[in-house]
Amino acid sequence: MSDKLENLYREILVEIGEDISRNGILDTPKRAAKAMKFLTHGYEQDLNEVVNGAIFDSDNDAMVIVKDIELYSMCEHHILPFIGKVHVGYLPTGKVIGLSKIARIVDMFARRLQIQENLTKQIAHAVQDVTGASGVGVIVEAKHMCMMMRGVEKQNSVMTSSTMLGQFRTSQNTRQEFLTLIEKR
Image 1 (cartoon, rainbow, N blue to C red):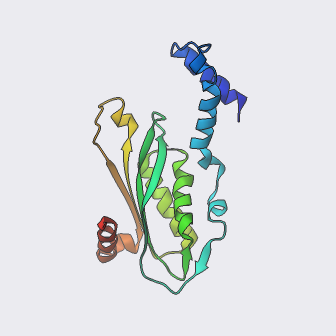
Image 2: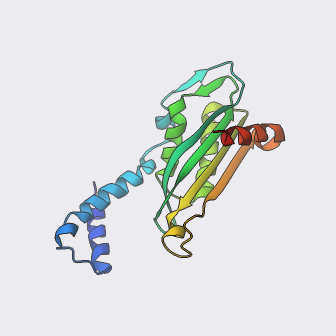
Image 3: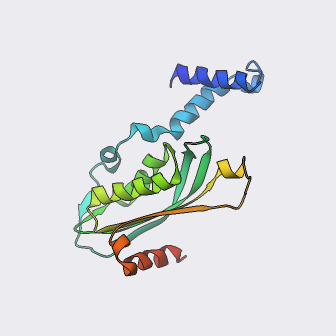
């Protein structure tokens, strides 16, 4: 962990008026630096590392969906969390990706300072790139602390963003099948 990051957190605490010699605060700069490194470890990952060769031959051409993938990210505007779920669907063309790798792709991009719209697009393009699918659909639903804890303070607001690539964009039937299947409980 970076001593520099720890020192910066110490400076922030002083700037907001906190007594950095107070018992409960003594180790806060170290803990905050460690937490920030964890929450942004996506910067240290790349797609090949995350997928780790888990692309398999398959004659399946039916839609594959992983839904309700937990999402934890931080907005690049306020460095506050947004939390929600991601639904990913794709149409294989001879290759499928290991199930856990989709969640790892989500995490790789989520663990960077983000806006939800870009995160949605990054996930879709990554799945497209590694699978060669004929179509990919990604929907992200999230609650943003920057809207809930500050500013307008709207506790029940949920943002939904989507990216549709290939057949998910060009075929209304494909898109509708995806939307119908992610709504089923």
